[in-house]
Length: 130
Image (cartoon, rainbow, N blue to C red; front, side, top):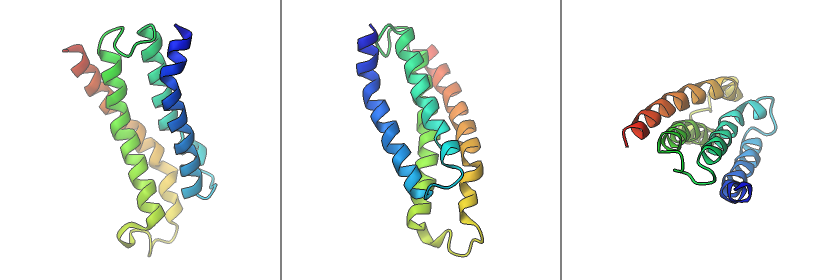
């Protein structure tokens, strides 16, 4: 069972490493890199809990945790990745006239955690009804 869990978590762990490298590159190693890795780390934690509860299968313990994990992942990771991308390419000159554009990353994890929490609750409710 442990081996099956590790095999299923491997793609997510590799994705987490890729996100870590990319966020560090976008923020140029700034003071908020570790803070901005919290939402992807929670996705990895939720996926681990889902697989442990399901004995190595995503839906082994029902649909609530998988749907909750997916519900958390979409808004949390989507918002974080989108704003990091926008910052990295200066999308539509969004950060050109800003005095300190790096401050975006100071509170971004809080916003992504709240959005992810709402998404988790919605996913949990949907999974309960499946």
